[in-house]
Length: 310
Image (cartoon, rainbow, N blue to C red):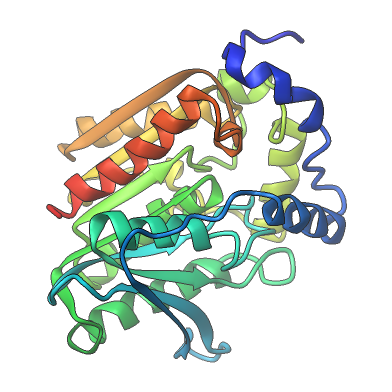
């Protein structure tokens, strides 16, 4: 199928179609690590310290590794951002999240806590989400030590990280957990039912398509039925959730579930900003020279800045 991609993305397409193949998890992890190693590294304009910590995990589970980015020239108490990397629930790590986390710490002046949650299929739901919840609880509990304003903690991520963020916001609301000021849902993976028009249509798009989405949910759910925390699109009540920013790409199978979820948030009275980026596909922000990619990256920073009143 042909797609009307943004012209600035076209020269790069021959490099991308085989970039991700979820049928072999170990191979795709190695492939994505290799691709990430070739990406530019964000260099902060201001000093940012980086420290890794092992924090208490969910009950009966291993400790969770986090990486804490602290902008040392910003006076405490600072806002905080719990960053959840993407990767279809099955790939990704702290290194993949490093440039984005450094940029948020530098440009916004927020303490960023990046979460190295356990991956599927080795650890299916609810393990990855519970790791993220443990990181949110730890961030709030250690607010004074980290120099964080406990009233200004945001959560966010892209792709599966966006889906985990949406599930985390629901979980924090329903458990009476730490207050979340804002949720950033970048091109989020939200619906295991795989029935939206974009999901059924986009079977051969670069980087992410319906066949990969099917495997992603198979790995994440591990044969169990999905509830609203695994697949937030299934949630019946979205009232009382934190304000949200949702972004979607035109030629992304995840497009419509993001659009629908944003509309439902609005209908539930949640302050929500939604941006649909024409001519883009899932992961097209990797092509950083394209103007549309630069706009998406800038919007990410500004949305989090506004969400945190930073």
